[in-house]
Image 1 (cartoon, rainbow, N blue to C red):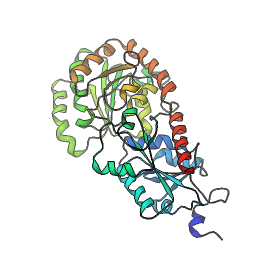
Image 2: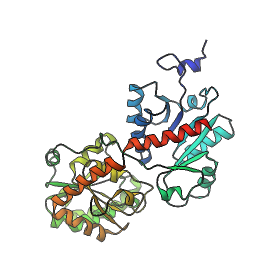
Image 3: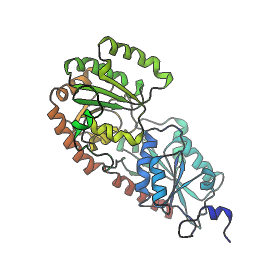
Image 4: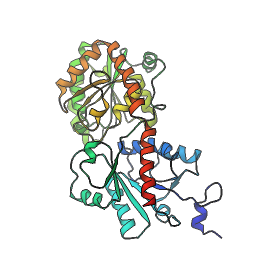
Length: 369
């Protein structure tokens, strides 16, 4: 008879669930990395048998319910003691503490696993992460820059987006009007409200541009943590002094499931971080037919077709950001044309299907090693 452990891991057809890969997301707060995993899991389970270990993610829950023989949600303890029947199970991790856990499982607990790490950083890792990455069996870089900074790279695979989920509104103007916000057009920035994300750069540009362009309203979608309130307070005061309180909308945290609709409502999206590991915001916005203006950070330079789908500016330069946005705010038709080109580029070059297939190929190779 099967053990209690095996019974808990029975697939729908009665056989033991034997994943090809364990995907981890061991961070409570929903971050950009969490969003990447959330979007990828339903697609990856179409390529491989996946055990997911981590916090609640809408994509993971939906995929596990709809296809339980391909994606199984598991607790950490159960995943550690999965039966492998002579195969190597790949543990795919994206954060340093998850990498440490996987290395400990393999080297100290002697679990029959292969450790696969995805590195998005485009600056040199500190000492401990470098030592850990050197212990991985294989590494995927998300850009050529990231791949050049780490050892054991077997593939460079950029992130993609689900262009069916991130899609334009049937009528963007009607979608904007339905929200009851001022003006005719929205200009969106998403992410944590803090200095690293360039919130101050965006707001300084808005203080210059919005008085000259009354048909536009700025929308900020993201959490401001208590430790960042002091950073944001003088910017809010400047908005009030400029009489722009009604045209700078702070949405607060927005659920991941609601973000595609905001990209689709707003004609322009800005991504102006001072530093970014990769950054999905730009291709999510492009997929929703928004024109984009981004800082030269993360992988944005590989995403934006300068002058065709949007513009790039130096990080931290509010004057340059305002100058890049001015032609779009002055001519909404130009922004619409950039959005059309961006949607086509997102479908052609940044599909999540290409990402999932690339990862699956690496996993299959490691599992046989």
